[in-house]
Each structure stands twice: as C-alpha cells, then as structure tokens.
Length: 92
Image (cartoon, rainbow, N blue to C red; front, side, top):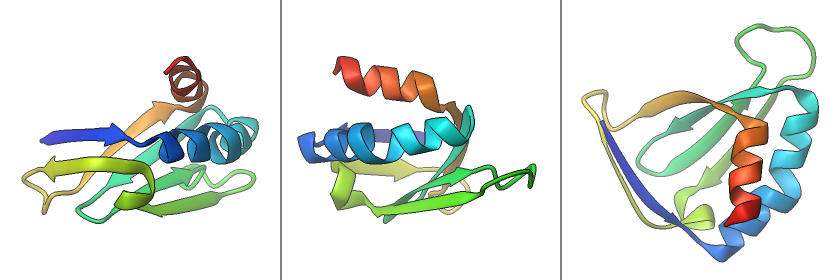
C-alpha cells in the first residue's frame, strides 16, 4: 500500500480550525478511510458508544498531488490519534 499527498494551506486550516477540534472533544481515536476520490474521517463507529460522526472530503478540498495505491482497490484504512494529528497540523 502506498499513499502520498501534499496538504494544501486551505486543507490544513479546514482540518485544524474546524474538524479536528470537534473530533478531539468526542474521543481520542478516529479511523481514516482513503480511496481514489475521498478522505473520510470515521469517528466512534466501531464501538457504538456515544456520538458517532462521519466527515467526508473530496481529495481536492485537502490535498494537492494525491496518490494512492493498494491491493484492496486503492483503499486504505487506518486509525489515528486525533490529538496527535491536530498537534502535527498546528506545527506545520
């Protein structure tokens, strides 16, 4: 599996100022689902306790030069600590 991208300034601001603070208040872990056209943040869907949220972005809303490849029809899913991602974006 391979994933390469460059976040746009607008993408950083969108995530840092609007979405990640809200997701961070709901819980620590978020799952990212990446495919050829979209980036989807899935929060609290697997354990079913509390508020669940889904945020779907078209790749151009966040990234320049977005490339993805995998043996699973170019889809990649992984868990990320929301507070660490938020801290990384603030330091960029």
